[in-house]
Image (cartoon, rainbow, N blue to C red; front, side, top):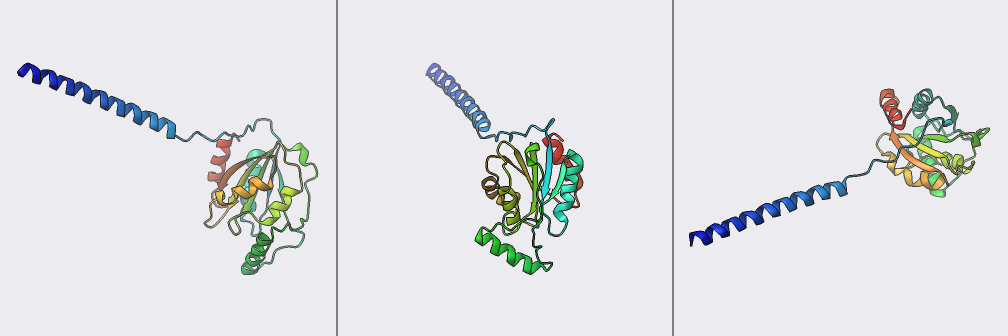
Length: 199
């Protein structure tokens, strides 16, 4: 009887260890499968850069200047032919109407030779959960096929991901890389992001 119990106990221990090993293996495999792959970083070496931005109050402009300084790119301000009102409420109402109508407000200026740029940083404030429609006009104005478009935004609360679907739709043929929500008073944070991109 003792011999039988001893054999039974040994068999039980062997099964317990096998089960634990299997669970550990499964857990490791699960962790490996659920780990998020790092996003492919754009190749930046030797690429000609344009930093294009829309800025109504000057906040996005400050971030764009940091990016231009760090990348050595050219700076281009996206401006509407008819300026937006100075009053906040009037601007937000107009922006809402433009979004509703999928409008393309006319722009004041143009990029003289867009074909020369490989990487285009595009910056904007978040208005009604997306970029202002002036950015859509900018996107429609040039051929972005084969270019890398890296976005950045300024916002009081909305994440940049809110605007990404529109940016991918507007910049047809481009590799649109979702960037960051940046802050005018945090140049160091913007610079750290640029370093991760290879600048």
